[in-house]
Image 1: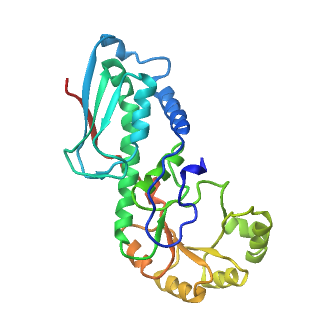
Image 2: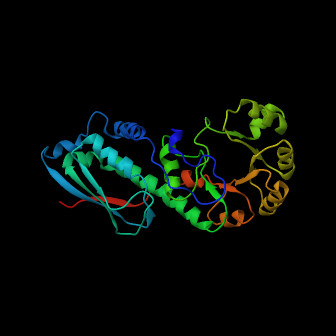
Image 3: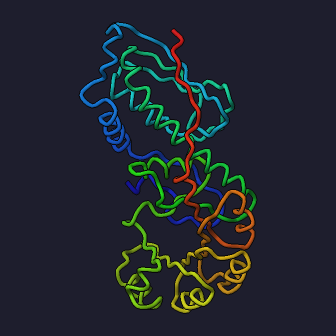
Length: 296
């Protein structure tokens, strides 16, 4: 799964274009979603003649950044390969209210069966991409990377992290398996910050990032003295963030985190930290208002 993530260790600057996850993974995710919704069969679809065909338009009712086209396509391909989806936009594209996004054509029953699952993917992932685009715009022009976290919707980790990239932000670690983040309880279990750093260094494989979370300037100094190269500053006030940047003087990559909102992120970025992680990119998502309506 980690292959879908281009931004596991971002530094400073703009996000690179997103890369789609493996199509086999997308299909497996879609099949699981269809099993959840369709189960043994769509009971209502029997009302539609089996030979009836329809065309539908996909419309957005609000401004957004689109994401999830591959999942939308795959829903209908799995249900009926005879369905065609002709996109007029691509992932990462900004759209305006009333804009047509795609034309869908095929057997009416299959279109109706797949509509909700396909729309759930597109609306949720577009909501994630739109939120990411808002945060990226809030720090435009500043040399800072805005990152997501592991606070994703259950079962949508890969999809939402892809959407974050489409919105112009960066990915943090994909999960517990590809980077080390030493938090307060890890430090308590290890006995001290130096002990936790030493244990992590002994356990980490080649190329595995080690990051440690600190909650005060004193802990920051201890982490710096212990050779930490990546430090997460948890819930630091603006003044302390500035002091942290001065204390580090480039020795470690600094990441601000904790309760960051669209209203506060630019001031935090202006302190000089390298990265800002924002749980709201993926956990506080509002689905984009889209409509798939039959036109013939």
